[in-house]
Structure formats: structure tokens, C-alpha cells
Image (cartoon, rainbow, N blue to C red; front, side, top):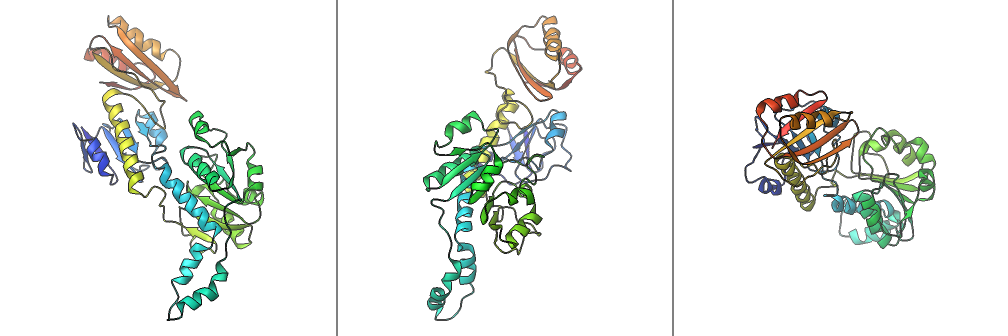
Length: 383
């Protein structure tokens, strides 16, 4: 089976897709697509594709809703690059506190035999502040946010966390020293540093803007290793110029921001470590293989988690609209052919649902065709 790669992927993925798969840039009828940053919004997805795997957490480069409508499961790899992004966020915060970034740039311009004297006389311009004892606000307590919060507690900071949708797993891993805040305005008012770790949605787009900045502590610094569109760039520039913000560190440079004083631009290095790339490649490859071969769904962004241990002699999976009587129509059709369903699981997510059925006998092609034509059925796979 062919897997189309739209970006270069770690060799770990190549090794994972070893038996029975051909991972290539020129697949004609791929069963799956694997990618990192390739923009798929204007891309014609081959009809043969049943799943797409993003080697990373964000999926704003993939038309997720369109994929769901066409029965294509989209996977991501939450947590696989979490440590790499955590380290960059902590580094960015240190750069915001101490004028290391400016000092390095200045030192690089020095010339002459008296460089040590120039350093000693000029270093007073780069006095900064320590982070120990300061207050950090972590917005978003997913895999990355939890790691950042825990690390900064260990560094001696007071850490305030905000996440109205925190998962049970996230809550279990959060250091008990992290203060939970339910009012974002209160977090803004108390924090010396604010770091963003939320996905880009209609609700979070531009969440850092003129109004939210006005509620922040004077001289606060913002670290953004999540998504550039979470902030209003024009409002950030104004706040840096008038001193309301002391620093803004972003992993998402753009023309509008380049050259702004007190801005630290990082060239999208959040997950740019071999460890993170290997972790993402391994996770997404395993998820795709399990779906292609067994129909199990783990870490999909458009369909529910759904798993079932194999039983019976044949497995079928069905993606359908989450409406009444669809399950009944499927099971009635199968049982009406005298075929026993040995095991069954069904899960829903929003307007879509997914089910796995293990059968004691093989379906005839004619029955499979009838199943595909039932109302509200999107895609049927025979495994």
C-alpha cells in the first residue's frame, strides 16, 4: 500500500511503514497521506485516501471539516513534540527577562583589541531581571502547557494556569503548586510573564489584543510558541512602543513584526529537534497503520477515539452521520443476511460517528454495496 508524503519525514516513519507499505512522494493511489507543514487547503486529495497523518499537533494546514465530510480521518500527534516546545518556551521567557538577545547582537558588532573594555563599559545597558519569584501565567494546560508550568514551578516562579477545558490527564500531571485560575482577566493582571499554549480556533484567534493587553500588568512579557494568529500584531507593536509590554517573543515571525524594538523573533523552532521529529513520525505512523489495518482510531481531530480488539473472521468499519436509526439500519441489514455480529463498538463526535463491526462470516459484495447505499452512510471499509 502506498503512503504519500507531502513533506520530508523522519526516517523513523520510513522504518515503521516498512512491511507492506511504500512511503513515497509520488504515490498515485495512496491509502494515506503523511505531512508536516504542507498546506492542503488547495490540494486535491486522491479518492483512494482514507486517512491523513500530521506529524505535529496543529492541523490548521489541513481542511479538517472537508476531510470529515468525505470520510477521511485526520490524525495528529499531541504531546510528541511537547518537551521540545517546552524548552523553547522557557528559553524565550529567559530571553524576555534578561537582555541576552540584545547583548549578543551588540557584542557581535564590537571590534578591536579593547573588546573586553568595551564589554565592561557597555554591559550596563543590558541589565535584566531574574525569573525566580516572578509570576508566570500559562494559558492552555495541554501537553505542552503542563510541562511549561511544572518546569517553571521548579525554577522558583509562582505559576498561574488557565484552561477551562483541561483534560483529566492534564490535571493529573500538573504540579500541585500551580494555581488554577478561572478568570483570564485576573491572570492578566497578576502576571509578569504570559505564555500561550492553546490551539488556533475562532475563539482564540486574536485573543491577545488591545483590550486584553490593557488588563495586563505594566511591563509584562508575552511568549508565543503556539500560533502567530493568537495575537493582534498591530496591538502588540503599539504596546511594545508605549512600554505597556516589555517584550514579545514569538516563534512565528512575519513582515509586520520584523524590526520592532523589544521583539524577539524565533524562526519557528518549536519542534525543530531530531527527538521531536522522531517522536512525531513514530506516533503518527503507528496511528495510521492501526487505522488502515484494524480500523482503530487514536488521536483523530475530526472523528472520535474508537478501538476494538479483533474477533470474528471479517471486520468492517463505517463512518456515518450522527443521527437516529443509522446503527439499527446497518445491523438490521447485516443480521437480515443471516450473519452474526461477534463484536461491535460505536462512538460519536459532533455531527459524525464511527463504528467497528466484527462479523462471524464474510459479507457478500452485494451486501456491502447495500450497506454503502444506506442513508447517512459516508464511508464503509472492509478489513
